[in-house]
Image (tube, rainbow, N blue to C red; front, side, top):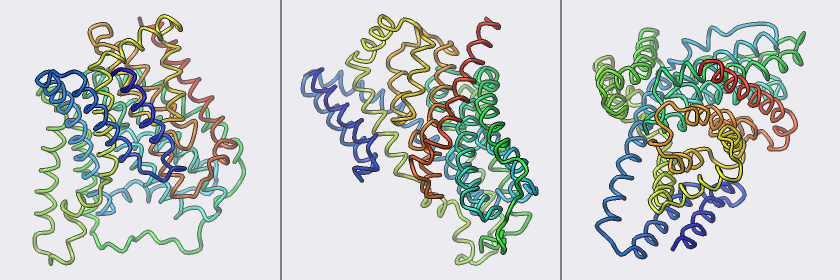
Length: 427
């Protein structure tokens, strides 16, 4: 049975990693992998009550992450449909490329921590199209936006799906992850940002002749500001909600979604249905990336079978025996996340290492949040932000390797060094 499980998981994992060349959606590979793994496990074990109980436990944890992401993605879509992000983006104005690079990097870093790295990447790259006419310049900016978005998401419990998984799973707490990983994340951005700004020094910003900031959606300034501030406030309040009530984060985000839905309906209650259709929560729900949610469900359920059969804990023991150093193991996991998706990597790590041995806010979990979050920037296919940038600006894989990967790599190692140094000084 164990051999069959490993073979099926490796094939499913390979199909996920090779999604683009195979032209098979990774969600399909994840769901088929999960179905086959649980089927093999159930048929081999024979204890249907035990398997059913374990599947129920795994589904409960998976559903919490899925509901949380669904709520967060919907809130972001509502804000975007009201042009709410223009509250930030319209204030970014400068005549020097190097100065613009600093502004974009810093805004992306903090915006990613509040929203998520994928949404922030899409918003900021869309803004670059309005500010820069030179495609070569936009490619450089897109590369830095990917690095900044992933660095910003790593230190926030709601900024990156892997950090969110660790937070909901009880491996990290809100204030601890912020205080511990913030400085390393800043360094992982500042190093590549400094180098890139130096390369672009002295060059002027060449903007398009016709800058059009209106998306064709007629929302008033009051509506934009209200939905932006309320949406952002709900996302920021969720960690506080979890800390105060000790209820799971998905309930906080769904509670906030209900409030946003109510306010939206009140603001637009006197408008014609045809006009306000694109501004409703129902429309936002139809626009969220359900394919990604299905992928998370599939891959987390697939990894759960390896956890229940103790394959992951056995792998952890082998790594500890052969490598021996926990910090080196986590650095390797982070670098591997540049090649394959970091969601199943972190899910596997959560199954490999027990909370009884490595309690909440242990070095392992904090360092894993940093490495898995920022390591994906090393290759364009290593993160959701990178894949989005690749599609939006038609970035070639090898162009990114040549121009951006080395910047992301030195930032990754610089931040990792800062985290280890900081940990040793404070413990």
